Image 1 (cartoon, one colour):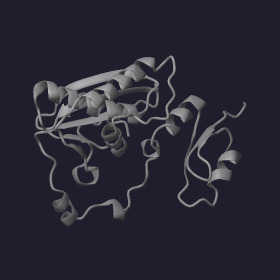
Image 2: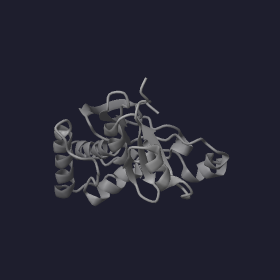
Image 3: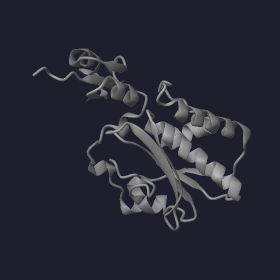
Length: 212
């Protein structure tokens, strides 16, 4: 039986990108301090992963350094109950993406969109925040919005989704929505604080889809 080919994503290395052999990947990562890479069974999946954050595909072992002391937890405090928590997810089996937002006080699902074809976690994390902002403006809410994605927070601040993911026939609908979200940010003001969900202190984001 022929050996199934693998594709290697290098997020951090001498050169980054998608490589079609272990030898090519090894040239970029061997002896490189802090190299981050992973193999995938299809080029399509590898390309999607490269356009996203490595942390969405590599589960790192929890170490003692990652555990917060009681003093650190007290400094962080508790999440604000009167808030919206958002999250996005990519299904590794189907390649579909979706996002949702919940009201943190009651865990009521305020919105759920998708699934959409051929997207990335970062894209739907970004869309989730903008959706929450638009909803809050419509309802005259000034509650905080929590997300566990630093990238999405930065994109919202820049009013642009700086994704490397390519537009395709499959994801045209998703990119149309992405364009409308960017336009909304560029033409609207909002007062809602966008805050980082502190997973180490509070546990998993309540809007998480449970696919880790």
